[in-house]
Amino acid sequence: QSLSDIPIVLLTCNRPEMLKTTLLSLLAVRGVRKRNILISQDGAMRDIKSIAEDQGLTVIQNTEGIRLRGGQIDGAERIALHYKFSLTSMFDRFPNAKAIIIIEDDLLFSPDFYEYFQSTSPILNEDNSVFAISAWNDNGFKHRVKDPYTLRRTGFFPGLGWLLTRKLYKDELEVQWPRTHWDHWLRSPEIHKNREIVYPEIPRSFHNGIKGTFMNLDTHNKYFRDIDYNTNLSISWHSHRNQFRTVQQQEYEDRIQELLRSCTHLQSAYELHNYKDEILCLWIDVDPDPPYGPPAFQPMAEFFGIWHEHKRGAHNGLHEFY
Image (cartoon, rainbow, N blue to C red; front, side):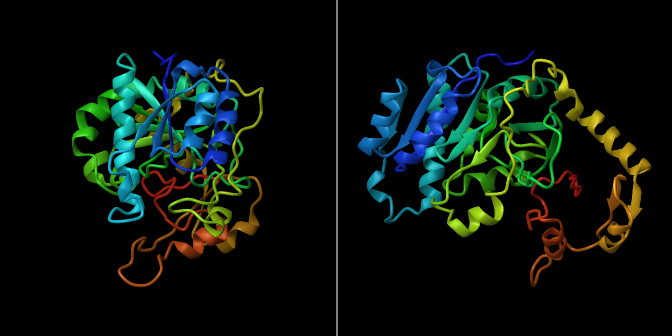
């Protein structure tokens, strides 16, 4: 059974213009209702609260230890603390919510962003090998994606618009939430326990921020500017309500095995120019995490124009793209 009424928490701090743009995008998404949105502000900047209230939205402020910002506490620690404050507050304010959607103030959204989560949510009940659902594809570059309804699995948490269940947060995450780098923590085997994240081939969110705690223009241009995201209003999940079954563990593995049986196997990227429309399987035999020097995967990533970190978007070492 899909989740029909999913609350959304939007985390923000001190970027009022960015928040305004994000809210305009969010409120244009089909199915999103203001009563289901909570703005969680880190600090008490007046402009942030005013923008949210001008839109008729509820705002909560995290002022605990705020004077430590820029002092004894670093950015990663402040963000981790605010995440826990926001998630706990959200589940407390929506006691009947089985799951929530988490977003930040530097995102734009596809028209079907909300429908995507509604449609894929049943997998969280039916497949205990799934950890969470994300709207983002780390390797969703415009020249590498094609199908708006294709879903993938990865062991590397992508974030940037994601669905978290109450059960996972309350039973496992809340009590041990870290004091810093919360996203790195979620990616650790001790936490995800080999469970994977479901994500769309074509993202349903777009990273719009070029300035932040861990963001600058160069990083944005290299890894985020050319990411595709759906802007087609005609894309609808109502006729694809069972699409989530394609990423149920056994069906997903069966599909991959069939691909490996039917594809043309290559041992070198130099062979690619001999083929045009075939399904190709290129095998790379390298140490992905060498103790010294740059990762051996990096030259191949640069060749295909994807992230140099080999785990991003990968399923058991497998990358799929056009």
